[in-house]
Length: 158
Image (cartoon, one colour):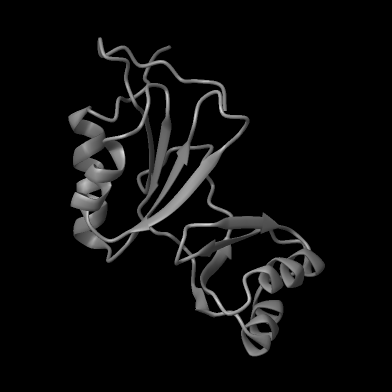
């Protein structure tokens, strides 16, 4: 496949480094090949932490890095936080919630889903915002794949 970046490619690594140089945190989406749609999200605050994240990953794992996490609603989930989020997030807007303690995450589109999801995270520190648009690279979003040992880059089944 043409134009797929390796996680070892200097173009990818330099761009990710630049994201950390201009932002206090960067959002990473890790999609695991052949794992029934399994994925993780991480908010990282240093390029060193990003490099550590790469070490155990298997070939064909996809990493999408977001320069701007766009998770403006943060706090410990309680009734007041839930009420504020229901006011701030429009009905029908796809939302994303990330548990800051263990990287647990969920998403949805309705206020009922938002209320239920936040209820599941009660008393936990979360970050919430629009679901990250991982399907298209831009100047502020870049995707690369963990290469095979021979350096070949092949996307997996996600």
